[in-house]
Length: 345
Length: 281
Image 1 (cartoon, chains in turn red, purple):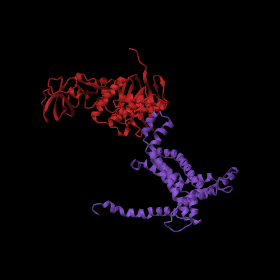
Image 2 (cartoon, chains in turn cyan, red):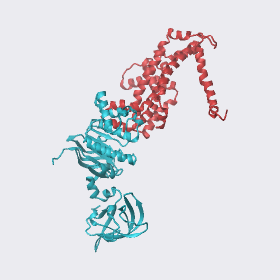
Image 3 (spheres, rainbow over the protein chains, first blue to last red):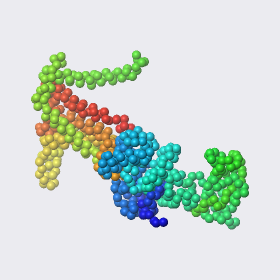
């Protein structure tokens, strides 16, 4: 396999605001045509990072190369990139068509050519052509999302940036737009760099995910790698509901301190165990007694909140697999150590 | 009746006041403008002689000077107020409030006092500007006092705050992310100004422009104190008709003409302003 040139290459990119370091020495190559997602909690510096990439902020130090060309000092209006803003930042005083044509107008494209391209983009983002003359103020939330996307594509960018564009949208519409965005990525073949605080969203969309914390990338990997092999408790807990068990060393060997049971072949300081790995099965390799404190029906699964010794745990069991445990009941739960992802910190 | 339409009864005092103190004087002015020249009675002897002589007797140039002065002043104050408003908006906080207060403060001082101050500043020989330059650098300069330029300078000086404050509201209506989006899509400084900033700030601009223009049209003191006899504005001509020439019908006719010109400009503009939008932001 030949190595394709990096679409965007970050070298030691750093941004400080006074004493606060928002982006701390980040280096990474983003491949051509990749859907790269940066996930982090608020305040992790992910928005600042994307603003650095788009040229809306200047880095304190570090370099930025686009296909080998140094664009560190290039102003935003000359970079061949486009951004979909969290607020969308649509021009409310203009029509849908004028919004989409904005970048083309700036480049001096003739009005008729602009119109044809705008209509093409409307079809691409699945809006009817009749929307061309409509004021953006008369569009619904989902339609505005699509207009913002078409406007960004209107500049024919080499790279598209997305700064949490779906965060303010209701669940159903978000799911629809996620699928459309993924299809759009496949159809256009462009490089997408996406910012979100939802690892779930990142999993659905991305080829590669970077988990960001305090201005640094904590882990970079494919969705599968991040899911199966988190390298820290932070990454593991970002995935949502997950059990994390601390391991202590005793003269008799390593034990799960909270559960008060042996931890054979501990390969790290903490064991990350997904809720679906925990079963009410007394014959499992590792077992412990647990009391059911809450029982939630999730449709395809049933979720049990358990108390075992000092630990509060979560188990998820496929609905119909027989577990008829009720609230307050104590039973033996167990898991297979092979399902554990070991992390050091 | 009271129960069926309480709104009308509550509005009645205001309606009466408006009719008595706003509509009635207007009617009287229009009525007087239709009376024979130099009469002091309101009769039914209507005629258009005053309007005919308004143009025949050379009141055209004063009206034109007033219009030119108002247009120039509006354009110049707008050009000065835009960057000022942008800077004050960007550095909002303590420092900006002090500067804003300093700009607003002179409004509380009589206009004539400020204009005489400017006149003392500009005076030839012993004036503050000329005197200082002579004493410090031994530079001899003339004066612009008693020229049209001095009158215009006074107009700009007096009316700047009336343009600035609505403009500050207008600039406050431009969300920062719209400017960034335009930048990101390839817009340069001027394109951002033309395509994003001016359209979004338009309500503030329009209010400031109207306020300045209408005030300038009625301005008199700048031309009188700083312009000397270089220029006669329509307000001066009207004052002269009423006070010295004792020709009320002529003064009234000129007043009606100014009101008509103002109305022709103000009404179309006001229709485009959404005051609610300005206040809500």
